[in-house]
Image (cartoon, rainbow, N blue to C red; front, side):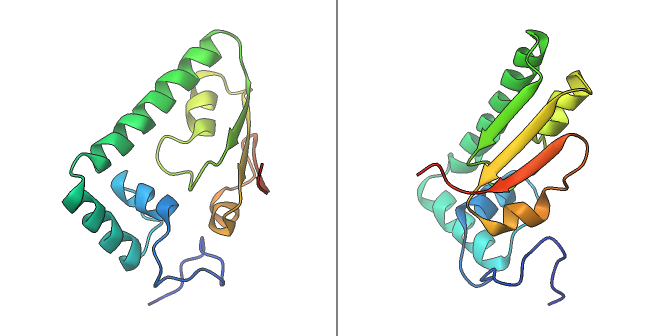
Length: 128
């Protein structure tokens, strides 16, 4: 396997990660076979889990668009997981290019995925 540029070297590709499972359910490409296997196993016992993930992402997009329409242009996304399709910064900046977003997560793969441009930044950390 060719190592993807978005994945830091310490990532254990043989162990599933819920952020990458979520990415898989959303149709993203930042996941590995272990994540895909875990996603299928979860869906086998909870068939609506992938749909709930998609509904959650759709709600996030609607909420961000609404907030921008009310004049909010600064966002803090704590526990962001892997920013996949419909990222907060993509939605916010589509509605108002001056919007700024900071992603905070304790998972190092997030840091490598978020490109710190376009008024989006990443900070590794935890609120716990």
